[in-house]
Length: 174
Image 1 (spheres, rainbow, N blue to C red):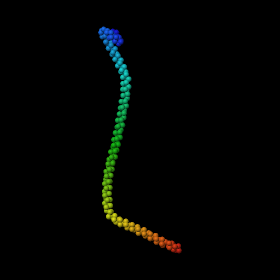
Image 2 (spheres, one colour; image 1 turned 180 degrees about the horizontal axis):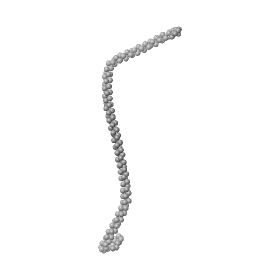
Image 3 (spheres, one colour; image 1 turned 180 degrees about the vertical axis):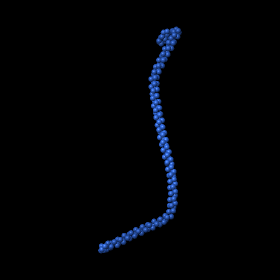
Image 4 (cartoon, one colour; image 1 turned 60 degrees about the horizontal axis):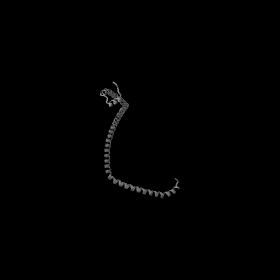
């Protein structure tokens, strides 16, 4: 059994070589084709290895980093939930205190309303006194005017008596 190159096989087929020899060359051609397919596959596999393995490594690193980020986020959300829960407890107690104070304010406003109503009744009682107070005011004005007149008269009398008395006092031994 002789091994022929692919070029020799092509020339035999073109010249019309006998079928027996063509049948004898078929297993060799088949083996050559399988070798060539195997080499092409290995070359392709090497190329894919150059792409796939670094990509797979990068994916693993990114997946690990993603897991770390998700874990960190979950931890932060946990702390946030605890903080919000404690703040909500404080807020609820403060709201209760505000509610109690509002009730007390309402009670105080009711008491003030009663006091203002009482003042309104007292002012209504004082209205008849208003005429008396007006009369008193008129009398006070009149007294003020009279007092002012008396002061003027006393001043005039002082001026009239003061000069002669001053002169007389200079002769007196006291």
